Length: 140
Picture 1 (cartoon, rainbow, N blue to C red):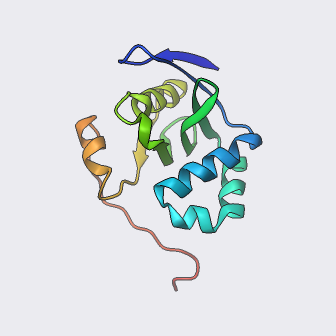
Picture 2 (spheres, helix red, strand yellow):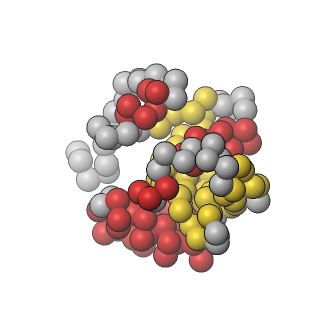
């Protein structure tokens, strides 16, 4: 667990995910209308239970954000999801989570997908776009 002082002087705690956190994560996903994660909550929880990057941000004892991803610990750190509760956006929590996990594996490069609403956030933080592909097993 690590305490971080944000730019607004508030203290948050970043700590490893534990299975009891999933109900809060599910609520955040529901509020954000990340319907695929919400509708497939069993698979989403399974993903959390098997990810080697799985951290939550707490403020006054409540989960207000999270980061989930995967890393090979040497080359790539892939961020699957980064989400901050709407009321807490702009506090620097997303930055703190990204810096925290990147600090755990400083030799890696961070890669992630962004939505049409989040790409400007990442560009402002110095991330550069790259081209990628996606296909599910069902999509022959």
